[in-house]
Amino acid sequence: MSRAYNFSAGPATLPESVLRHAQGEMLEWHGSGASIVELSHRGPEFMEVARQAEADLRMLMAIPDSHAVLFLQGGATLQQALIALNFAAPGQAVDFVISGHWGKTAIRQATPYVDARIAASSEAGGFRDVPARAGWTLSADAAYVHYTANETIHGVEFRDIPDVGDVPLVSDFSSSIASEPLDVSRFGVIYGGAQKNLGPVGVSVVIVRRDLLERAGQPRADIMNYASHVRGDSMLNTPPTWNWYLAGLVFQWMLAEGGVDEFARRNARKSALLYDLIDGSGGFYRNEVAVGARSRMNVPFFLHDDALNAAFLAEAREAGLIGLKGHKVLGGMRASIYNAMPVAGVEALAAFMRDFQQRNG
Ligand SMILES: *Cc1c(COP(=O)(O)O)cnc(C)c1O
Image (cartoon, rainbow, N blue to C red; front, side, top):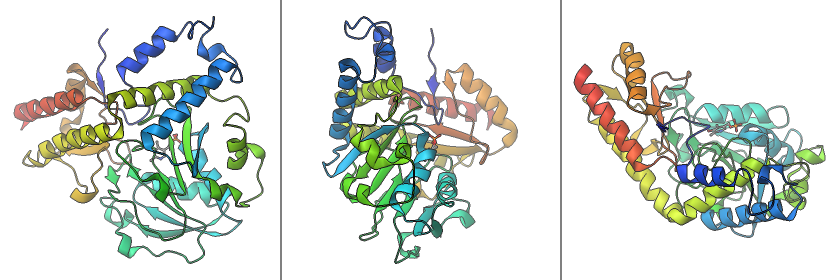
């Protein structure tokens, strides 16, 4: 077996030790006579897995009691619609700050239900920066302000939590959740699909300030109601037990490795390795994002000549480096270097990039 270093943006690489652990428990979980994926979600075995996963995520992210934690289906995209349905009255203003592709998705999902306003956007500049807070036009009557903490495709990240006063701040953290310490208390809602930084696709994490759950929102079915999900412990219907279990193993792995402080250090080191290499390549490689807004998670880059792209990808694969093709919106390359990507993987990529430049520069 030869596992490559996988730079895919999502679903993304998982810690090998987590996969081995799951492999070891695949046929039978803790003497229960069955795999965890074969047991009732209401039985004591899975209830324990679910309880432990929430406790571990709370410890990992220092989530205060003021906030509920949900494990739901439907991905980040469904949450973008549900957040509008739950927290805004029909037609109420919601402010959106757009710094890339996923901010545009967020506004599209909310538009049928709310008066979706663009408070700021960096689209005119090709999403190469975050819109500076001083330039945002916020509505006095907004139900919440939404922004995307890390834009996975454009490689643009907010390095600070924007101050929006008393209006609840809602943020899509799909691709940067638990990548560094974060003051969760500053947020009304933090949400994300698990498949980038937290685990497998098929489960989403929603962290919601409990007082927001009392908002009337819009007419909606129980299954679309966050308050009902909180009351039902994220088990209104059959939850994605395998995905939830696997995410729980990732939380335990992160805690054992030293928690978010340690991952903040590793992520800073990994991203600096790549940006320094790109900036020092004399134009052979290029990243176009403003230095202060460069993502620590997703590093999009271009070769000086697109004709080299196919050879770059083929030779990278030969060198055991996969998932580097850029998103079709941007073209070029992208290295996604989430928590589970070891420093050694980024060092291997940097060595390959230097070598490729030497042979083709
Ligand atoms: C991947 C991603 C999404 C979409 O997630 P789904 O789980 O596929 O709905 C939304 N926002 C961001 C920032 C992402 O990276």
